[in-house]
Image (tube, rainbow, N blue to C red; front, side):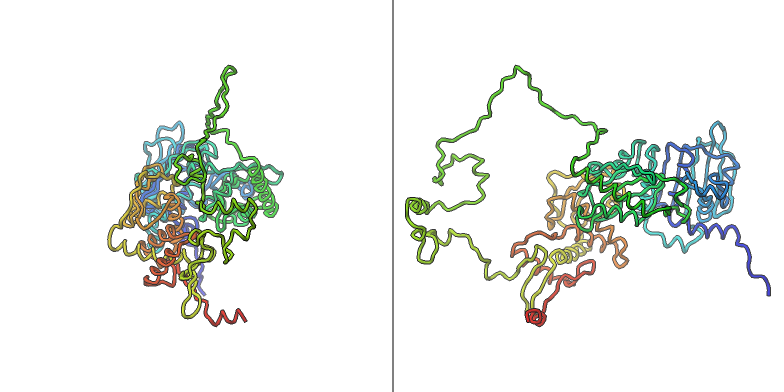
Amino acid sequence: MPDIIQLLPDSVANQIAAGEVVQRPASVVKELMENSIDAGSSNVQVVVRDGGKGLIQIIDNGSGMSETDARLSFERHATSKIKEANDLFAIQTMGFRGEALASIAAVAEVEMKSRVENSQIGTSIRISGTKLVEHEPTSCPEGTSISVKNLFFNIPARRKFLKSSSLELKHIISEFQRIALANPMVSFSLSHNGADIYNLPEGSIKQRIVHLMGKNLGKHLIDINTKTSVIGITGFIGTPNSAKRSPGEQFFFVNNRYMKNPYLHKAVMRAYEKLLPPETIPPYFIFLESDPSSIDVNIHPTKTEIKFEDERMIWQILNAAIKETLGKFAVVPSIDFDTEMVIDIPFFPKSAAVSPPVVEVNPDFNPFDKDNESRSSYQQVSRRKSYPQRGWQELYQQVQGKGFDEGMDQTGQTSLTHTEQEPIVPNATQRFFQLKNRYILTSVKSGLMVIDQKRAHERILFENYLTALSMGPSSSQHELFPQSIELNAGEFTLLTEQIDGLALLGISISLLGQNTIAVNALPSSIKANNPEQLVRDFIHSFKENTSNPEYDTHQKLASSLAKASAIPYNRQLEPIEMQDLVDKLFACKHPNISPDGKPTVSILGIEELEKRLK
């Protein structure tokens, strides 16, 4: 029998390794940024084009590489981080496997320029699909610049599975945020298609969080600091009222390395138990310091999964630390002494005259004179209800000695007329009733119909928005004072991609730069008192619809805006509003389901009611 086992060529082996290390453009950004951090860089620039599918360029001012090191760095398992197996249990650097550059060069066109300190000439290397194209000296700044073009150009099957540029950019931003948060003393910048997304100066961890996530979050951060013999915990957690329905501001770091750990996430959520609104997640930025020998970071090629020696103990310490921090915040809110604040305290010299407060009194005020126009503005504002002024003589007579029954007529009612009394029963002709400010109830031939008011309104708006997207711009109402809204980079990028579609639906948005927008107009059909909340709800809904394969771009846009602008739960509706909502619902093409496929209507049949009442 002939031999059938053979060694794979290096090109094939590198492509197999690339399948584990390089999953999408964001993977390239992560590996190259980590290399820049390990090189001692104080400034790292990230340039991206077409969501990373066209170009990824990382420029740093680190230590650089010699001519020999530059060439060896593209070989498999070539690394300066470890020399023996025992080094795997004391890893202090971000990268150590020696797979990143070899894997990237196997599936892309790579050009690297690097120069070490005190050297006049640098090295330029070009590799395309593991093949060396060019290796020559060049003139370049100190540090390293790596350009990765046409990712997966030689693996069409992998390239066609890449998502849209906006979605790939979202993943790149996520990786950028993780590395930038872990290294606040390094300045970073990120640009996409020539437009700046981030320009982060060096600073403290809290300053880095604010620059990445927005000033609004900075107002709701609580400092956490716990040191034990097992592990050290530092960082910031958010107050309960800063929790959001969508994840994205939850970060764990171990020895400044980002990690994913659902088990420790449960420890955080358990600490917030009964403090959060339903289905919301608080933001947290937690840094764990542990002995490198007590953790294993070598269990996954992407190094985002870390195994602890005693994970249960860390769970308990983390849970207790967050509970303690939240308890302190509930008693005494934290004060940020790093924030510049000017408190205006009035100064009164000893010689200043002190005058007593003056209370205005109208001596001519008559409470029984309804035509009296001399009432104070306070009395007019504080009066909640207009009581009838007739019949006060009868009340006065009762005080003078007449019995209570003498002040009533034969029907047992007071002598006030019927029109002056408030009704105590609902209108008998009312067809619709609201239950718990959530459901609309009405009687039908087959029994009792129950309508979910929010889902019903979502269906109505969804079909209206789809019609508007196909017919042309909708009517809108301009805001008298356009409100500016600060978003994080991911939200700003998502909204920028959908700005033309939102304009067709009547929402006019201006891009002010620095991840800030202004809402200039809203659709006439939307009654939104808080444009900022509408925008944030839209972004949250659109993120949820991004993974829905059944919707095209217009359907995702219409569904997201319908969810954001629909009538919320816990809102009381007038009978005429319920009537209008039901009429419009059953005028829709698909009145029985909401845009995300949930039922809008349920009928409780007569037979079921009879069974329940037996």
